[in-house]
Structure formats: structure tokens, C-alpha cells
Image (tube, rainbow, N blue to C red; front, side):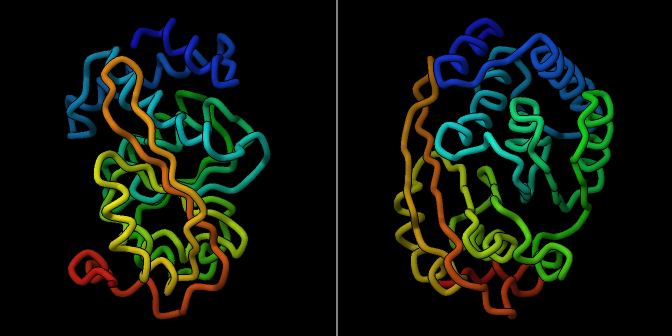
Length: 238
């Protein structure tokens, strides 16, 4: 996907980018490649693949949720900033919080947000399990997102405690999303969530499968969740 195709396909979905936003994406790509030589941020480095598999893929979240408003979003395990930074570029009014367990990635994101001139972006070096137990963040976000971080049963325990009642948890997955969701149904209910929708589609050009799972937070998460760091992954709720 070249930059012209990127602009055109987003415009078809009602997401219009101006010159400033396109420069921000270009700077994002350049910094991603530069920092990737010093640390492992991504295995995808070809420019057209980055625009398709990272930038466009991230923005697909906006095609199934309403981001045309000033809402608080928490991105759990964002890595190199996906999906939250591409979404922030497209929707500057969003208030973004990113939590990641590696300080190196947080350092990259700090440098990135400064170069892109982004405001209302907060970065936290923390484990999702401890972050979600903090009263400053627990059940404070309108939307919580995670992209291909872990299985749905694990993701739900890390993310649902951060969503406010009435808010949403949006999981961005590749293949086998429906199977994962079936396994995670009990955990989602236990954590205060209700499966609202699942959207399946293919990325343009390469036709790889993608799914976006939307879970509504219908009641408060029991205080004991998430459990201690490492426990959700080692002993997923069933």
C-alpha cells in the first residue's frame, strides 16, 4: 500500500487526512525505521507494508467505533504505538494513554510524540496488571484497546478493568478470533463485559484476515482482577 492508496482507502471510509497528518505518518515511518535499528520494534520495515499492516490496520478500529468525539482511550501493550498513535494522528481530539511493560518502547514513543507534535498523549512504563489496579486509571477510560497482544481470555483481564461502565474494550485480532472469543466468554462476563459485536474483514491487497471484537463494559470488574503480574497469562480465566 503506497501513500496515495493509504489516503484514498481511508477517504473511502470517511477518514480524510490533510497534509499535516500525512507528514506525521511519514515522520512516524522514518522514526520507526531509525529506532528499529537500535531495538526490536517491528519485523515489518518495508514502507508499503508498514503503511498497510501497521498504519492502515491500526486505523481500521475507527471504522467500527465512533472516534469523532473527545474520548479517553487506553492502549494496552502498544509496543511501537499501534493502534493508538495512528488513531491519534487521524483523530487529534482523542485523549490517549499508552501503557507498556518495556521502558525502551516508552522511550521511543516519547521521542515519537514529541517529533509529531502530539498533545494529550500520556505514556506509562508499567505492567497492565498493576496499572489496572491503580485508582487513577481503573474504570476511567471510555475505550480500551489492544492489538494482537494475547489471547482474548488474557486480554479481557488486562483491559476490561480499565474501561468505565458503559465504555468499551476493543480487541484487534488476526485469525482464530471467533474461537478465542468462545473460550473467553465466561471470563468476559466475570470481568463485567458483554460481547457487543465482532467484525471480520480482510486487509486490502494481501487479503489477510482481521477481526475487531467489541465488548461493552456493563458492570464493575471485581476488585481482585486483574491478578498479580504474569498470572493472567500463566493461568487464564476460563
